[in-house]
Image (cartoon, helix red, strand yellow):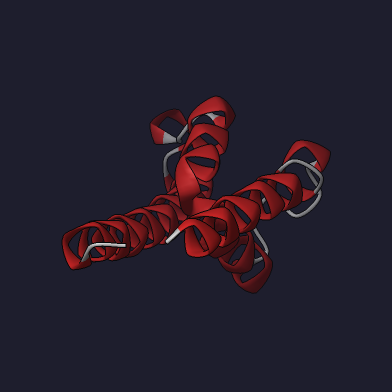
Length: 94
């Protein structure tokens, strides 16, 4: 794999991880202080599907946020498996 592609993938991974963590923490804070300013669940799941599933589920477990919602606890792990399979595929191709 060309170094430019590796660098772009790494930057994307870091950006999506940081964004996922910040949005999850923000939603937890908004749940207590400003319920109208919360992030809708569809957007949280979209962020997970775009590559932020692993940092998002770790953050949710650490801050005890949405851990009783089946759509997150059963929805994010398959996304993590798909992301891992995709990265493994890229690794094998290059």
